[in-house]
Image 1: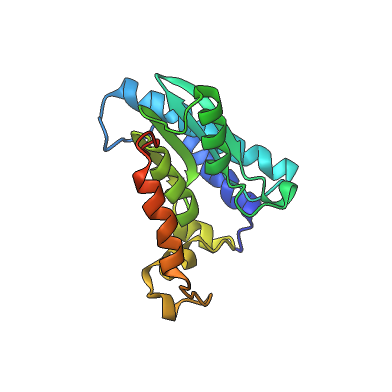
Image 2: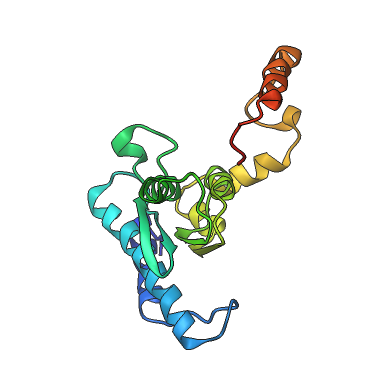
Length: 188
């Protein structure tokens, strides 16, 4: 039987909503209940997006001190923005709410393993932990390119599908040298 994006994400949601996570992080039932609560919210956002069709079936939340401070679902189609992934939207929301570009002490819950772009944004935002549900392989099975992108990132520039050419390095480095001289620059 062929699974569509709708049935697959619904099945993922049912599994997560009807079972307690056996967490390799802790083993404490209260901790496991809390992480399930936040993962359920990420999955619920992905399910709501099936109705709205603003983008793919992905949802994410950012949590600090046991409270959700950022929510996001995929809005690529709605906004015509290929960067409007659930994790990016949730990070932007959380950073706006915290009035900071860093998510120190925060945890991110994503309904699916983040693509390389989202993983980069997660690392830049410096959260404490990342939890995810479905894998990049699961996303590939319903037509998303996450796994392919991970493979591309491992290749040398000359072997990638998109031709990548470095030019004007010396001119670009001059700006870096000026940046380095600024004593009051923000560190991130």
